[in-house]
Length: 221
Image (tube, rainbow, N blue to C red):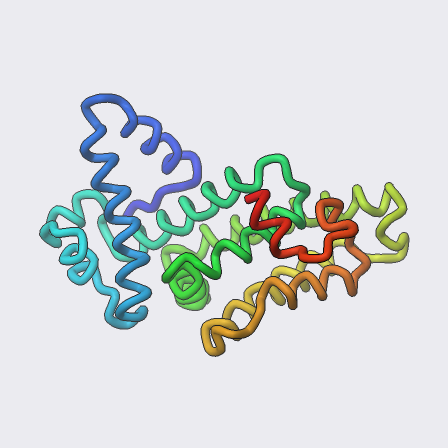
């Protein structure tokens, strides 16, 4: 069974943008959107390939032409989610971008539910998506550590702080907050994560002096 890497997914998207592939690109986008809708409405247990195909208005066989398995489809949804969040955060510092993504994801039906379902399923050592998440965690950790080292050099983060440990804790806390939010939708992930960043002494330049941090980042996003 073949699963797309970051590079192959991007190549497919670029290929789809050329004339003969425009219909295929539109259908792929419709499938990805329907996947979020189905997860939001039916939950992970009933979000089958057939249910997604029905929502798009195509046959299960045609859906499998685009995505050979449920796992491959979900990996592509998460990849595109990462791409979209990265584009939305252009021009922001790393932690402002992260906070803006938290703010945005809370209003996208199904995405947090889908992501957490996939992450938990991939804890199985034999799960085909496990390498994807291992690479994703490693990439996110490098980015966080890089930003923390910059803040240490600038003197805004304490010299005795441990960037790699903080990065691991932030990633774990972020995912834990998402699970809590799925159980209690009134749990404010944005506010709690901002509080955690400040407890570590992490500076978010975009929010310096801001009376309403959420409004600042919503406007910038």
